[in-house]
Amino acid sequence: MSAELPSRNIAERIYAAIKQDIMDFRLLPGDRFTESEVAARYAASRTPVREALYRLQAEHFVEVQFRSGWQVRPFDFDYFEDLYDVRIVLEMAAVKRLCEHAIDLAPPELEELKRIWLVPDEERLTDGKLVSTLDERFHSTLVAAAGNAEMARIHRDVTEKIRPIRRLDFTKPYRVDVTYSEHGLILGAVLKRRTDDAQRMLRAHIEESKAEVRKITLHMLHDARQRAHAAVVEGVK
Image 1 (tube, one colour):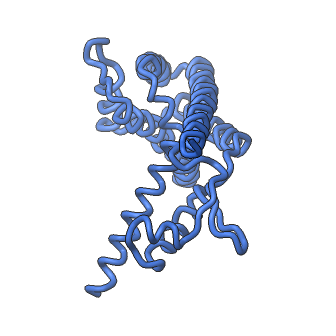
Image 2 (cartoon, one colour; image 1 turned 135 degrees about the vertical axis):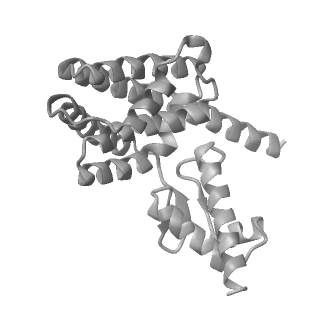
């Protein structure tokens, strides 16, 4: 067991490092690499490297290439937009259930959402990463509160898959303010059982976020490729 634990720790460290490189576009969609290259970079054996890569493969970050190592998955906007569409269907159904079937949020859940989102402007948080986490919790709480465990499970699965790009929505300060305002309006409509208003605002909120994430992702990919090209040119000089 003493040998197994360090190996797992190394695999976890490699997994986290590669995932962060992908999410920050230091590793670009389509970039290829081998297990040996990763092992050399992290001064590790190939066993924890392979464990980390298979975990990233299961999460759709990388894919194995027959006889040619590994590749960062090409960015598939259609895949992520399909997931956003599934998310909209689930959340719209949850909001409808909350509004029309008199399913009450448990007091702690209700108080938590009100405490976080229904606050004066000067009390709003500005840390994008923290607000991203709270945003995810806002939406998952609404779905869970609808009382359908299977719906909540599917929503959690979708949420995990879109998390890598969804967080980009909060790299822009103005998106944090917009999220506070829109969450407050959605929550207010749900609490007043205004089904049509809640669903309309929720759909618009998610659609806007999806469009912003696409725009930010394209911009970041362009900048990353420009930097990579400049580095290659500089290396040739």
